[in-house]
Image (cartoon, rainbow, N blue to C red; front, side, top):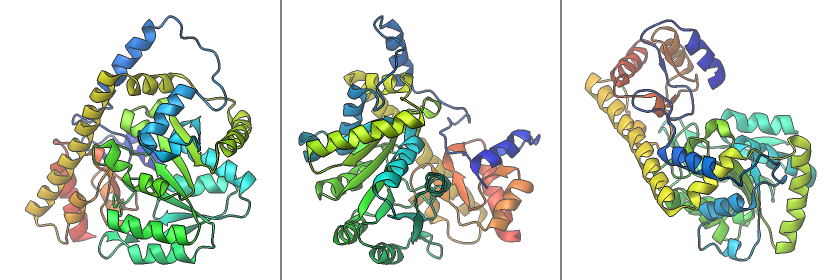
Length: 391
């Protein structure tokens, strides 16, 4: 059920009806990949810069880019940034940031376990396995109510040994699309603080979840302001549409600016021996947009438009299922946020979606809402209706 395998099967399918809702990448209503207008403009500006070259970046990446990323994550008014206590390195997008953090843990937090939500993005678990970092799970999804199992989550985080690492999705939980409310985040934070856990925020969807950069960073910033020790992985794949450019960062909050220096030199060593230094082009695009007020505003408008299209498709799919009278409650499709909907379809129903209806999805029930369009939503709804009634 990994998305790359499902994608290969989709490519090989000759059916005219086929639909791909397995991949975690935005699509237009025509079902096409999209390059943001602000990205095109930034690239045009970069072409005109005669002083740009192809020299290596430092291991830790482009310093200006890193500062802009820190402000986007922690906020303009962040006390941590003002005190200079955040260590941040440029990374190969979010996956690279996760692997860098895992390698750092392997060296400096030997024997500590990372607690990851059940379910989660599949690669979270395999990155830890590949890096040799022990991991376990905490409860997250309540299948009966198709919502958050807060009691189970708090119990498991409470039961984890003091000073464990708790992996949290900053916004738009993948695959469930269910995020804690502000009140629930407060309860999660209280337990993490009492247990002296390190909280590792994976921020893959800032601005993409609600269309607002600040709202999507609220939880992480609350933990930061409360002084909890943090790791943060940041990706620009989804919110800038820079999937293949591999643009991200990894941050660790420290106690002192001296500690930041020590952490950065250790990250440099790890990076040196993984891939030497990060690529420039994507970081230059992000740097250009984040430091140009007009492009920055245009980017925020485009983010809003992407998240609105996905919200529209949630409503459309819900309306179609309602008009078909599909058995069960489907309100979770509109209440979930971000790129994915966790439909609650069984593995057998998911298999039938693929085999019988050529609707390619993961067998855990995850549907990429970005693959839903005004042209295929009726077909997808009919397929769901059929498998719910007959399998």
